[in-house]
Length: 162
Image (cartoon, rainbow, N blue to C red; front, side, top):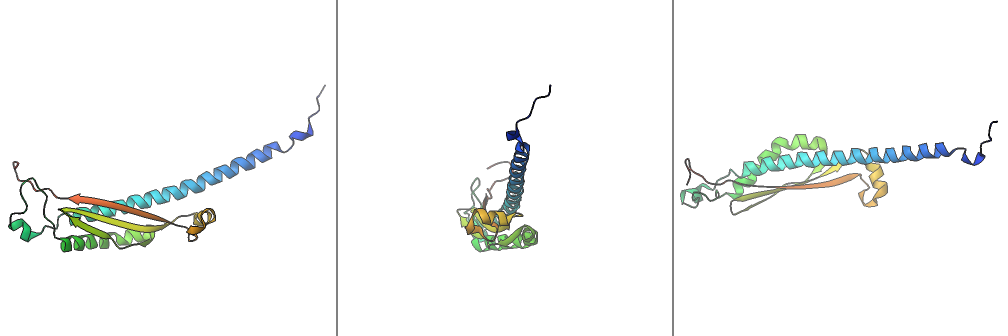
C-alpha cells in the first residue's frame, strides 16, 4: 500500500533553493567587488614602484662630486629632481589609472638619506557599490579608498667591488 505524505513538508525545497540562491548572489557580489579592489591596488602599487625607482636615480650631482657618495653607500638624491621624476612617471601612467580609479590623489614624495618613498592613493568605484552603500552608509558613493607606498634607493658600487 502507498503511504500518505505529511503535508508539513510541502515547500521546504523552495525555501532551500531561495536561501542557497541568496547566498550564491552575496558571494558573487563580494567576489566581484573584492577582485576589483585587489586589481586596482595592484595597478596603483605598480605605478608607485615605477615612480620610486625613477626617482631613486635622481642623483644630487653636487653631493656626488663633493665625495658624499662613497662606495657601498647610497646615492645622494636631489629632492626636487626626485619629485619631478615621480611627477613624470605618474604623468605617463595617469591615463591608465583613470580607467580604474574614479579619483587619484596627488603623490606624496619624501627623500630621506638617499631613499625615496612615494605614497599614492585613489578611490575605486566598485561594480556593486550600491550594495556597499546599503551596508555602510558612510560609503554612499560606492567607492573604496586604496592607498599604497613604495620605497627605493640606489646603492653606489664600482665595477669589481669597492
